[in-house]
Image (cartoon, rainbow, N blue to C red; front, side, top):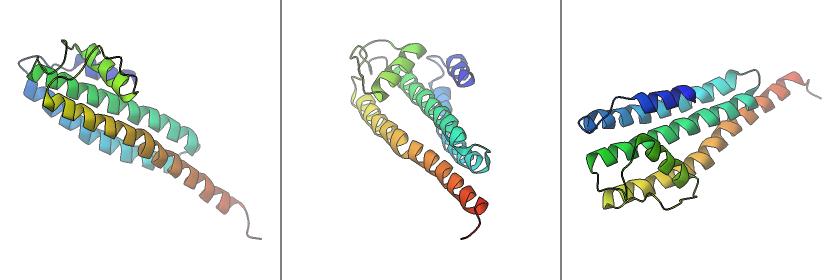
Length: 156
């Protein structure tokens, strides 16, 4: 988690590097998918699969938040009028967390059609990630535990 936040805050993107920011977001989305698949494999081979599933959910959730915050940061860099106020990277992270947590304090709001659309899609993806993603990770861990129990107990 600390490493992800370090990369997020130190990624060299400025007003002149919007393309680099969008490439970073694309790489982040690809990495998200790859890390999710890798975590499922690690759960299958873990000594304590349920613990690995919880760790995986935390890692994948954090990565999702960082990627979404990067998207908001890139959109603001592309058009400073796309949000109700200027966004720093911390503001983009704050906006992402409050939006995905459905708290939505209302201090930062998307103002353009593009940013409202992106925010809406990201809310739906966030709910899907929390629901389906965590369910998949926990389901894999449960299946591993069940398979191990079946192999350990002799047939009756």
